[in-house]
Each structure stands twice: as C-alpha cells, then as structure tokens.
Length: 157
Image 1: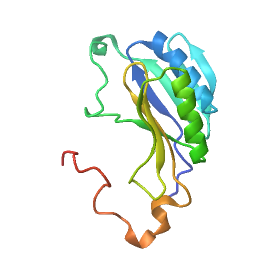
Image 2 (image 1 turned 120 degrees about the vertical axis):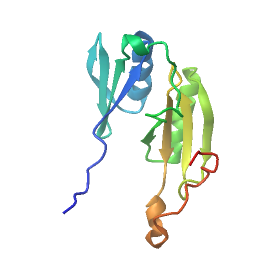
Image 3 (image 1 turned 135 degrees about the horizontal axis):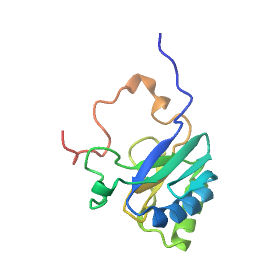
Image 4 (image 1 turned 90 degrees about the horizontal axis):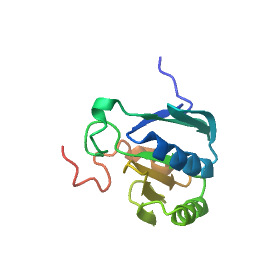
C-alpha cells in the first residue's frame, strides 16, 4: 500500500564559495520567510514554509567545477508562493539586492496560470519562485499524465 508524502523536507545545495553563498541564502531565503536554525562555519540550514534548505561547501577536489544545470544532479530549485503578488514582491526584492535575474515575473506553459521569477545564486545555481493557482495540472485529471513536457522541446531525449 502506498503513502502520500506531506511535502519536501529539505534540499542540500553544495557550493564552492560558502562564505559568499551563506549571506546570499540567508538574505534571499529570509525574504521567503525561512529562518536560520544552523549557521556554522561549515554550512547554513534554514527552515520555513514546511521545507528546509541546507547550504554546504563542495569537496576540495570538486571546487574547480562550475555549476551546470545540464550536468547530472540538480537543474534548479523552485519555491511555491501563494500569489502572483508574492512573485512580484520577490522580483522587486531581487532587483533591490542586485541578484542576477534570468527572467522577470512571467507566465509559463507548465500549468494553468503558472507565474514565476527565475534568478541565480552567486555561483549560478538557478532558483525559481512560482505560483500556480487552484489545482494546477490537476484541474483536469482526465488529461493526466501528459505525454510531453510543456515547452521542453529542446531537451535531449
């Protein structure tokens, strides 16, 4: 018999320059309502919104590599906001903090009403905040599962 999970407990991000990443994540995740519960020389652990993010340093032998979202592993991390207005507030905050923005708030084809902002941490790890009103793709359960990813035509098979 299967279970239904209650959400995502945590994600751990590995960075090369922890001293540069920690203030970034503390500021940005703090704006998203997360609070630091561990702030140590070897990592930052923040909790809020029924999830947590841990940021730690890469191993010495891997510090020569930059983040590449097409390499095996993490592509990007997306947080769910409650409203379009929240997305606009996040965008305003990111601009104020001079965070590199990949795209300003915009609608996307991934679900009905999908609205998001996409940005990068100091090492190029992409972070997104989105809002999907109502039940999203579950509004029409008879159409599921979809047979192709919306707007993923350029992805390798």
